[in-house]
Image (cartoon, rainbow, N blue to C red; front, side):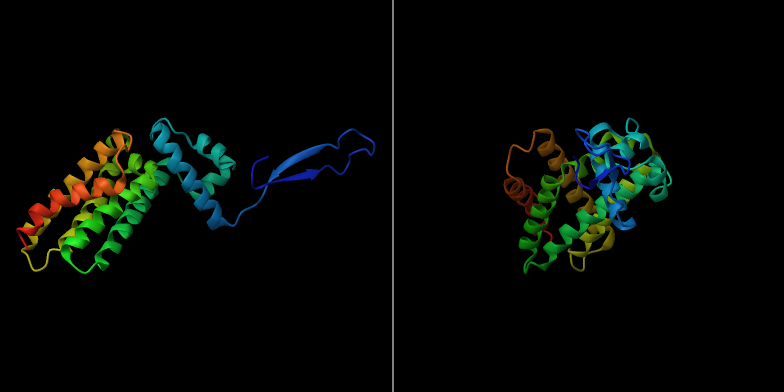
Length: 214
């Protein structure tokens, strides 16, 4: 029996039957917990099947809710996917921002790449949602993904001191591209190298350029 389900004995069960009639009912969750559950299920479903081939019926079924309940939380599949893009990008940025606590620029670069690779090691479905082919199907999704990259670029720019803003953004875009290229390679190769090893390679490559500009 699935977790979150309760067995209820029917009131008209006849004593002496081999087994009383039973029905299974879903446990009612608070709205915030149900919304979180649906988002988690949807992330896995979109990562597995892509945006177009994932239906709201399938998400509702996997989440163990009815379709009307699903629509109480999310008005459409489009809205649900957009929210996942924004949420996943926000979580990634928070993980990387924690690296800013390191004392030196070199250590911050290394810690930032470690956070980046470990984020996707722990959440491979997040990689598929942020970098997968579903983004090509809709201009709004591409815009949302671009906003994630732009936010990351702004963070990188803030780590470059008093450099000209346009120059700093160009450098940040380069580092951003390096990160994306290496994470794509790593994921497509089945994450055969440890995340820390990939982070060290990326940091070494990025630092070679950043150090000469500080």
